[in-house]
Image (cartoon, rainbow, N blue to C red):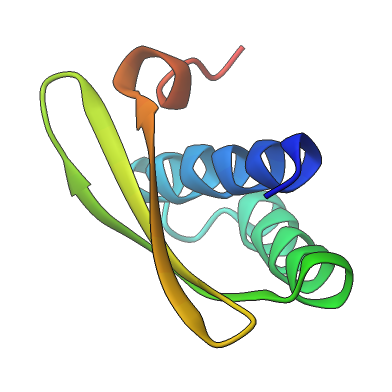
Length: 82
């Protein structure tokens, strides 16, 4: 996976986390759709889902060209909304 695709998946995880606190935020909802669209069109990545959060990590599941995969990010990185 390219670094760009990984950064888009991280952005997706950040937005999903932000939506837990403000689920009706149209700006976040729109940004999430744009990221999903870009990942699908440019990287063939679909079906993103934040699967788990531990003390230290968030785990995101996704399909890349019909192959199920997972990636993890440090919790402090996902929860940094600045």
